[in-house]
Length: 606
Figure (tube, rainbow, N blue to C red):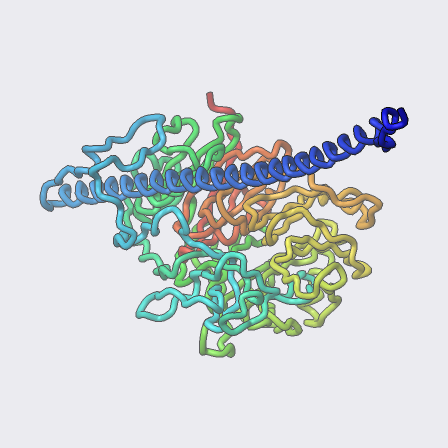
């Protein structure tokens, strides 16, 4: 019986709840691992999608750029064909062979109210090495690339790292400003105000010192030939010239080339001149004006005089009585009669070194008109007695070229009487020592001085104390021009970022002291390339700007709208100036010409 009940002793098993817990922990671990792997896969997927999207965007941008280039090339070729046909007709009219119609014009007649189309299949592409007629630039892309006059061992506005173009007789042409965009040098470290506010300028460097070169305003090494004498040029006004006060001095090649510059959307430069209504344009044989169709037309622009030079015109400035215009070019300064367009005198320092170039980068009349102050790339400022045509003083002290001058009305005779330095404004007081000054200006009340620089900044100083007041930041590229409004309440600037900005000076404008910061009131957008020069009209109703896009634009400072765009030069518009007493303005350009224009207020034309 005992064997019947002799069972093996049972070993107690693990509790059920413990086993379930272990299984759950194992499942949780596996789930966490899978979830982590899924998260990593999602991250990889997002990254790949982002990369793919970015590459697709880049491809679309490249495709759009290629399409725009094709259209631009097509339009340039069409304009060349039209110009060739015009010249052939003119030749036939003078007894030459009969005109043969152009296949290009027959196949692709101009279409109204439509942008130019790219060449169709079967049409040969435009060769990049295609020769160009005199006066017609190399396509719309990098017309006269570069920036305003920079220091160089060659002298003149050329940069030191690029070979100059060729002028007459195979000599290096000094005025085709050709540094690589973006190589911004420090033109100097201080602004010395000898009652005319001239700044320090760029370092002269050997080739390769790109960071020490001043950007240039004009492009490929196509040397600009001086224009032919007036009597050798076309002088027969057509219907489109009515109202011009002076016989034009260039063929229509310049006009055709200027039209080829039209480009991006939303700007006057995009408008096809042929499709603009007659009341919104004004044409001459080698210039035209397009008025903004979105606002009432308030101005009429006319060409008055063309002033030919033998080299690049770096600067223009009216006398305070408005009777004379001074221009600066290589080695000489000219004074012209505004009324007649005649050259009154030529000022040249016979004691200056004869080797190399010596560009006059800045000119400024004294308020009484008896003296003319010039700044050149030999680091010296010359005070000229206009009547005697002699140098009264040579002001030394700068370490680099002189790029800008301005006169103080309150101390107008100080540099003439003493020839001594009165005060010095140091760039390092308000930022980097090697910022590089490009333009200076006195406020109308002589309490402030402003300096534009290559480091995208504008600096303000108090004239009485010499103390720095503020560094104004806002532009996205080097600032090349500054000007105060006539009431002294605003400061205008132009930049290589292709924009102008109007700055409210706050209490600076009235007292020279401020508890307010300078603020940007508006940004004026419309130029297609670097803004190189800016100016206010004497009544403050208009702003005028000149650009590397070869255009001059009039702006309404109240609305920030462009009133009109003038195309009248074959190269960068380096300098603009307005007459203090009359409705004239002047432009100086790399095409070896200065021009005087009139602007008059008109009633709105319907």
